[in-house]
Amino acid sequence: MTTIMHIKTDKALKQRMDKLAKANGLTLTALVNLSIRQTLNMGTISLEEPMEFNQKTQKELDKRLRDVRAGKNLAGPFENMEAMIKSLGLEV
Image 1: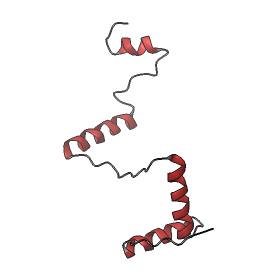
Image 2: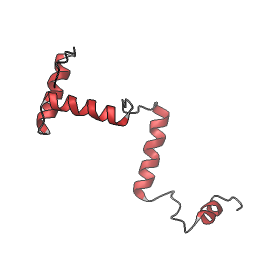
Image 3: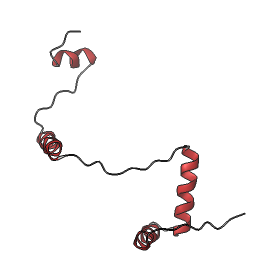
């Protein structure tokens, strides 16, 4: 048995979701039902927003990412935990 659920949402938001659903071979109704089922199966409500950093933190993250891509300022891989601890200048 099904029931009708009426919700209010921004028109542009609905249009974007309808387009996304269609691009994935779904109707908007199917997408909403999948979302409801997933939420119930998980037992939690998961809402995520992209993390935004302040300018100083973003600058530091960008620097670290450049280092990683260039293979600079990296340590490891390590054979074991003791080798990792030793590379940090700590005693085991």
